[in-house]
Length: 110
Image (cartoon, rainbow, N blue to C red):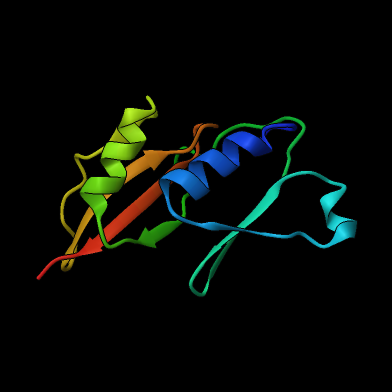
């Protein structure tokens, strides 16, 4: 993530995706960035001086309400891609964080 954009990261990962913030150890907090968690998953966002968004490489998260999350992300004007085909029992979509990084969201379908 770009330097100084922690509040944008918090707004996205906490308010839109439902993560909670994990307090970084004091020594690491000096570097900036932010850590988030949900269940057994942790996501650590580090600051890069020459930041470029990851448009291909991405994490994938299982969610319970894909359509609801997509609506929330779209309501704040962030990019989404709902054209992803279902894959082995999962409905999928891509959302892009405020910095342009791609994130795949997957919901189980029966």
